[in-house]
Length: 146
Image (tube, rainbow, N blue to C red):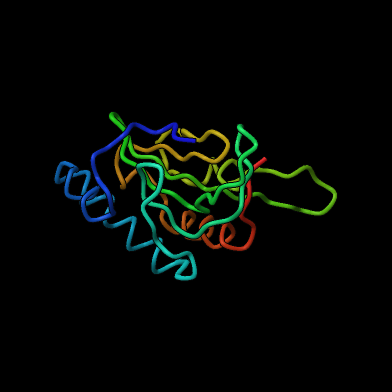
């Protein structure tokens, strides 16, 4: 499953070096934040993005694959942080953790742009990093997709 724009990079360093300086700076800051916040989620380059941690997932082709718990990607007009994790609160339907925190993930005045597991943002300064750390910590404990 590769729904992401192909890149010529073969690893994280090559991927980062291909980015414009402003985007690279933001991505490296987030990379460090993820590594510091959830060190058990080991970084790897997968599906044209930076992945952290992994879990077994059955894709749309019914293939068993490894999928990142957290992933970071640079898109044409924004950056994306994918949080493949669910809140399994008792007596409630499973909810994507990114959606659970959608209204708190962004700083005041920034319109939330969250879809299921995807957090989209144009600038790192748009995000509330304290809330993002909480999202990362929850994702580490409850990886998965519906």
